[in-house]
Length: 615
Image 1 (cartoon, rainbow, N blue to C red):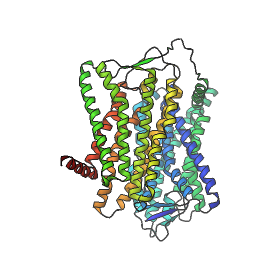
Image 2: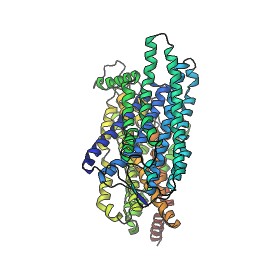
Image 3: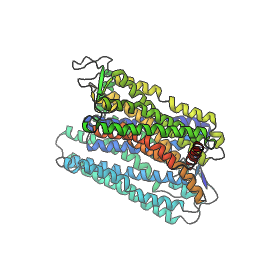
Image 4: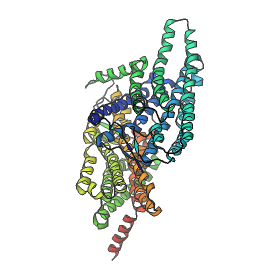
């Protein structure tokens, strides 16, 4: 069974206008909340519980709108609103979980203001880092089992003839209107959960602010009262915007509710409120405004030449590598030489087999062959240099060679992210649209996808490398790493590196987070399609074609994301080296093993190749 989201189909003439409008809103939400996350992480004056919660709230808002807006944009673009039963249930479940999290997090933020204003002397003790983490985690997980149960209950209802949902996403009120039979119990459950997750947190917020206002009014100084009120005003505006529209929707789920009003209210708490939040928190918060001004001034005041007296012109760097364990140098040399030979041999065998065996002349193995070639290039940028340094016990590398190495590491790393996304899309088309697979994934399309994966990141990486190596470097030229990577280079730079940190975060989002989200979406659709298969053997076969790719994705993205989404100067250097070993050396070593041991076609092709060689 599938549903049709009508969205704004009653005004078809405005579809393209709405597409442009909501696309701009979505970009504003991503940029606005992304800037708040970045500012609160980088600016030392904002390292307090209040801004920790605001940063978490901004991340939540990005997740919240990403559940509904991309789907709505796709429906406006294609002018088709079809959504599968499982996709609809998944969307509702994620939406309810994130909505409940927002209610709890707003209550936590109100409690933080209560403690700060009513108990200022105990604030550092009551709101220490451990407590803040517990409150945030509690906000995220408290509603999880309840909302999963509520979603299951709603989608276990029988649905009558019509499958048309007069809404732009799968929400409770329009779904209940399609259900046939007695839905009294379901409406009661909706009311109970609305009270639990909307009314109770709202009452706690009101209780907190009544105590806050009472305390503020007792302050003798007008300046003190104004300052105390200013720290709460932004939060109060967000609370009323969100709770006002959400309460009307979920506390009034009757079937006779006007559908146009329902959609309008949903637009408020799902799209407009997340868009206004960063504006409210930046325009009405002096600390955030000051931090933004400082950041903008840093961007404007950057100079091509730095006049600092302690700046030196670097002609070479020294890669320390594993010099802190000199007695293990030759053991490490042997290990890494063996690993490098293994990577070359195994990936070369995969390239050879996929090109020779006629049974493997499919898009899936074309991408796999390309991926193996990419892995050979990727490790060749770092391992030979590291082996030379271990052998000579000298880690000197010229300025130009260091920049070149960084460029190729970043370029090939970006290509790997995009190619993994293309491979996920290939599996999505193969499993979800098998009849159209030969048409959608013809040879020309495959070549275009591979070429795009290789060249898309080149201009960005050239700009990023040029920007980093145009920085002035202070006295030390020692890089505590085994290759020229961004975090160790930024640590030896002097002057202001704020812009560079911002570029690293943005590039990490573009080349790590966005491809990962596309992979997750692809596999969400894949799993949904696989679960619909009637045959257990068919499900097992479908899962087997995806499992190898999923393992590789987790290995690569897990370590690379931690490195490039946390390029802080206080990051552990040993941890940085360990994580880099994973995604630059160990992952490429494991990839061919994973693809051969978990892939029957390749194992059969290898046996055939060995039989030919032996005969």
